[in-house]
Amino acid sequence: SISLQLTYVPINALTVSLSGSYNQYRRRQDQFVENVQYNNSIRSIVSKVKQKTVRFTARASYNVTPDLTIQYYGQPFITRPLYERFAYVSNPYAKKYDDRITVFSPSQIRFANGVYSVDENLDGNADYSFGNPDFNFVQFRSNLVARWEYKPGSELYLVWSQGNTPDAFADTESPVFSSLFDNVFAGQARNSFLVKWT
Image (tube, rainbow, N blue to C red; front, side, top):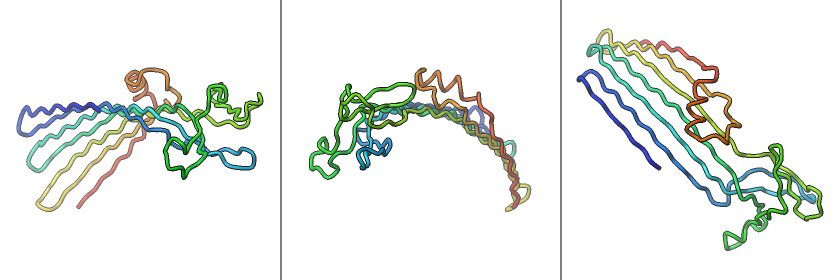
């Protein structure tokens, strides 16, 4: 995990901060994928996972007056888990971890058109199949808040919140940073407006 944050205070009334982080996570051979039927029993498919996550965050706070404050928060975000080395749970109570699963050999599993087909008994016919679990999730979230304490103890809040989750689910081949910047503003944004008065 790598992260960096910069904070700039040009005047007492204004604070701006920018941060970014990159995280790479590996999960061992226990990530659940799907349950499938095989010979009147259930096969629980599991796999290893390599996941990359990138986020950038911008924050700004400006005190127009001691009683009037404007704040902004924005974050583009992407996470991409890629599944590999598929197996099925064969002996879940085995003492040794590696004995709890049976990993498919290259001759048992085949990938085509977004589907993994498994020929577990190696008779030349697929015994079951499951979809490709890889995915790419991109999102942009932001909030703009104006707070006015128009008299002591009484406040008015005006909030604009925006969320954008573009359809980048299948974009698992391009580099993570490219996918983030190519897709983050491509979808239809959802805007919410809130007025709070106390």
